[in-house]
Image 1: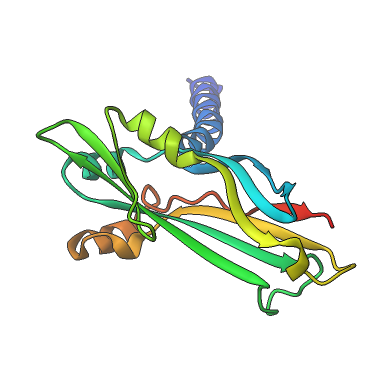
Image 2: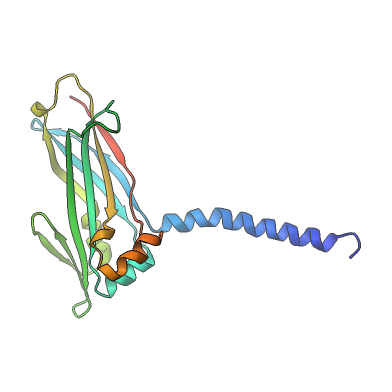
Length: 193
């Protein structure tokens, strides 16, 4: 047309689709990620403990690999730091807990193994295994007497998928794909003493 009306309509449609895409992409990215839902560090019998709930949401690619026999290693990184410490200052305490999740196709069961203690649990569903993995209750952190008096400390927690523990042929794809970069980011709580 001479007045350019169809061009204005197509530009409007393009803008409409771009806006939809702009708001949809973050939702798609949130669908597969780890998140620390709740975290507390109570003092029990003169020692601090960690209580936390972590929501593990795997990408379709990671779930497909799991169902095809690939073991997934999950890591909890727990740091105790002085509250006002600089980034380069050493942690008061740093702990990494590692868990291996695997699926047995013949039995249809999921197994969760704590790497440090060798504790092995079997589950009928992936949801049950992830619920158990994500529920941390009474994990010992540090005795109150070990902390410097009148110094504020905080506990930081991060859950992530360990890409270095994947089979070698899968690693390059995992390093380059955002669907494999699964991490909760850091969450913290204060140790009040």
